[in-house]
Length: 74
Image 1 (cartoon, rainbow, N blue to C red):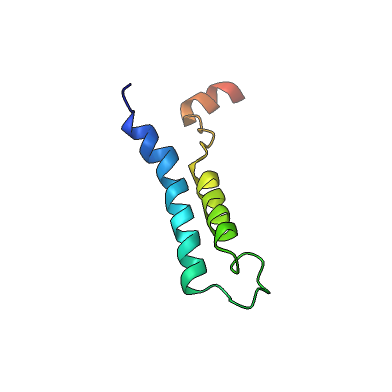
Image 2 (cartoon, rainbow, N blue to C red):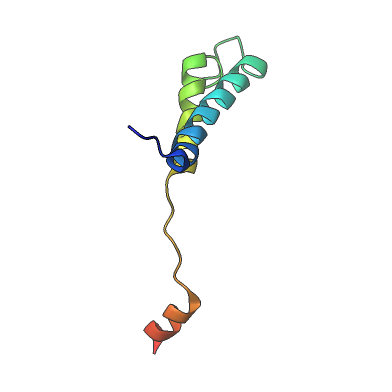
């Protein structure tokens, strides 16, 4: 099976980087007292970071060219 590198870079990499950044945030900044719901648990921090990566990786709607908009308005 051939792996499409552009899909890998556009979809998977932001999720992995988000999870890594979430763990780094827990490790370097997170609170140890347990009063912080996101940063006191490494699993929640990784899930939160990965979900931000998923939001970033979702495709957005493409805008139409200006020429097409002119034809539709007339």
